[in-house]
Amino acid sequence: MNSPRTPVDDFRFPGLRRRGLLAAAGATAGLGALTVTGCAGSGPAGTAGEGDGKPRRGGRLRAAFAGGGASETLDPHLANLFADVARAKALFDKLADYGADLSARPRLASAWEPNAGLDRWKVTLREAAFHDGRPVTAEDVLYSYRRIADPGKAFRAKASLEPIDLKASRAPDPRTVEFVLKRPTAEFPNVLAAFGAYIVPRGEQDFDGEPVGSGPFRFVSFAPGKSAVLRRNEDYWDGAPYLDEVEFVVANEESARINALLGGQVEYAHELNPATARAHEGKGHIEIVRLRNSVMQAFAMKTDRPPFDDKRVREAFFLMADRRELVDGALSGTGEIGNDLFGKGYEYYAASLPQRERDLDRAKALLRQAGAEKLRVTLDTSPVAAGFTEAAAIFRDQAAEAGVTVEIRTGSKDSYWKDILDSGTLCSYRSGAMPIEAHISQRLLTGSTTNATKWHHKDFDALYQQAQSTKDKQERAAVYERMQRRLYAEGGFLVWGFADWIIGTARTVRGVAAGAPANSLDWARFDKVWLA
Image 1 (cartoon, rainbow, N blue to C red):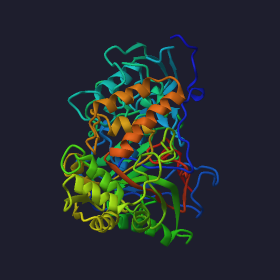
Image 2: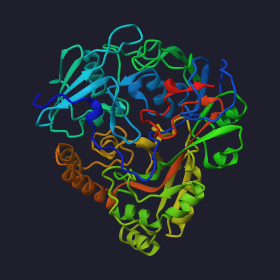
Image 3: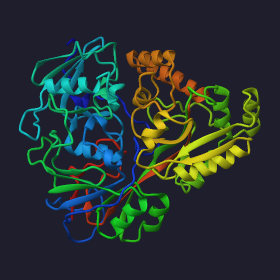
Image 4: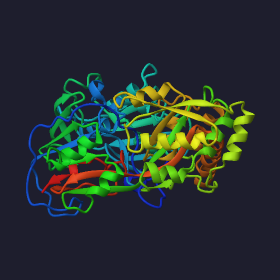
């Protein structure tokens, strides 16, 4: 390598520049009943938070998430739902993860350094072990990444790992990985932190029997669509968890999660609605943790099929949306309006673009030009996420004012995210915390495995590669702005708002990070949580 060795903590590419904390990503889905076993630790009531008293060991924390039904898996490379990711990060580790500011922070990697050309990166591994005692080695890293990149599979992190030439990359010794890249990549640490890029033991393929990872908890039991029980890993490289056990229980209905929390059946309820939070906040029964303006709320238009293969129709839909009414009605006013771009407040966000306003006359004119004056379109939605069905009904009425008939089709929570990825033409959508470049790589490139808008443009792909390869930060920002200007003009995401992300906990729970966007390092960090 041509540059001096740089500790990871000192070699961070800037992450988030924001007005407040933004959170949440991925999606949650599923139908099923709440199943809870075991009992939690008990003690004096208190306020959930990071600095309340001295951590104590012991007890089982029961955490309620929406799940994916009988098809759930513990394969970390298939993690897509919030429940999947929470389980995966308890069992496994990545080389890096995103901090609260969305910069890459070290996990299994203790250091990384590029050569002068930014097309070769040396990654040094810390001393860590899998649950069966085997050390985590460079060969495990290469095996994991090659498994994710398998062209016959559709693993979530595949597009993020695309810059790596995995055939040329090698492991010169057990704790060193030399990554050879296909082109200079200035923000390669973000690749190491990519959503779903977990390290698994070399040769491992079966993760639903008794999965072996290097994470803070060890496998005990798993019943897809019901629960997963994990036990403290006393030998965890980052320090053993305080909890004896954590149980992930499936409660797909928000009402089931809040009722279980209020009734003492669980101590942690993931994703509560704004109305629920208002009803219980400050009442002394439970604690509400809010991550402000966290979740990108949108409608996704399939750009590869009628009617949205005509960019005039897409622009018309941008212009018929009343974003303030959507935020006020679907999110109870707890959020900010969007501007048809992901990542408001994030580094590289094109904040210079004018806020799009509703313009029914222009929308009607565009529809006339496109020959779609009496357009009828089906909007797929589901109660899978807070505000989805409410926003669908509001937008249906807004579209009617432009002469467009929107028919709402309510899908199953159990399969919604899978169903809308390829089928339909218009759907409710949401996303959250990840760098803008990661959002592009996973959702907007021709080869992206979660490309919900079917945005397939080779010239756009080329711009992304150009941005990756640009060393100068200002020049790189200019390329990202150019890409966003195109998405703003003719993309498939109608981003109408950014919502708060809300978690509820029992008053005995301590150590829940209040500033951790979902899917970032300290979100669902149950190894740092304890029971008072």
